[in-house]
Length: 63
Image 1 (cartoon, rainbow, N blue to C red):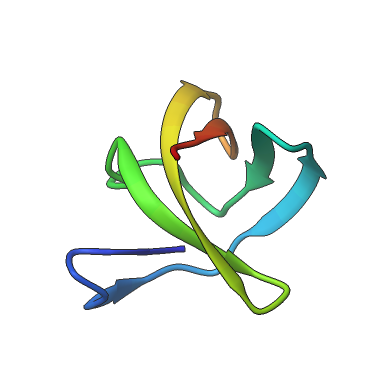
Image 2 (image 1 turned 90 degrees about the horizontal axis):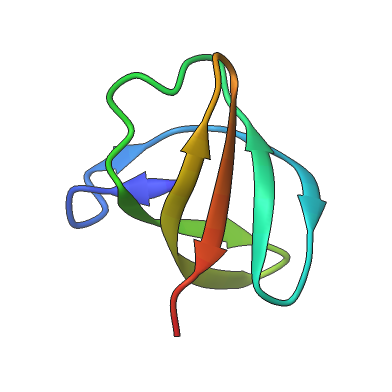
């Protein structure tokens, strides 16, 4: 996960993924912006946060 023009990087784990979004797990959702880039499998997808829990987030891929 990257944001702030690539100057901020956080590790996360993708728990579930579909063509339109993903559920990710992270140490803390605090400080994660509403939109960010999710990098996985050699690709990068722009994401918008849909929901947050203590250590999980649901995101939609932005086209």
